Length: 227
Image (cartoon, rainbow, N blue to C red; front, side, top):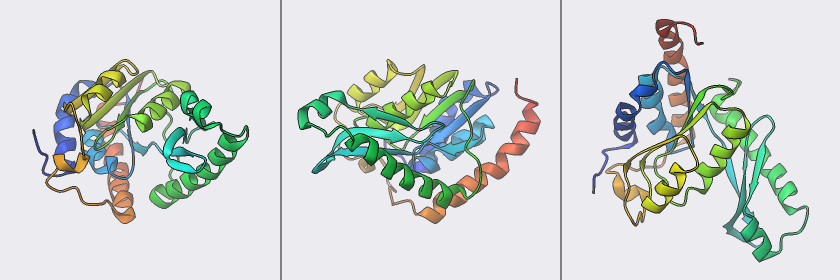
């Protein structure tokens, strides 16, 4: 099993595998919080803007750990429902709508906390790269991919240092390209693949996003106008 020193080192290794996307007008979307330090080296290597993909799980009534679906920010926001779970637990007709509205309020709060007033980057017509620090079931990533498809992304790419093999195989059929450095049959804890897997604080997320914003503009000028 390969172990990464930290999320930044893992991101640099992923960036090497994604260099063929430089010059394709890509945009990198990190799944916070852990996906942000992984995504930053990728965005810098590709000369791409870095934004967040904010997804919140909708838990089943009385069983919040059971994923009934997810709500993804966007214009408009997207709600994904696991119909099998909904049928199993007998969800009230308005539960998903009300829970999605509540979670969108939390999504908006987090975006303002981490990005202040910087506008979201549209994926329309672009290569959209979704990045996380590790993928177990893939539910959040699948919701993000669906939102990107509905938002008009030209190409959808998933990148993570580690993903459970069954999940990795499933995701490859749901996006245009998937890059994983490690694909264990049984994932266990994502943190076991890192020497340093400390919690990422809000201030660090904000600082990394500011760094990305300041470095992306010179890179775009160097590459010339996007077409």
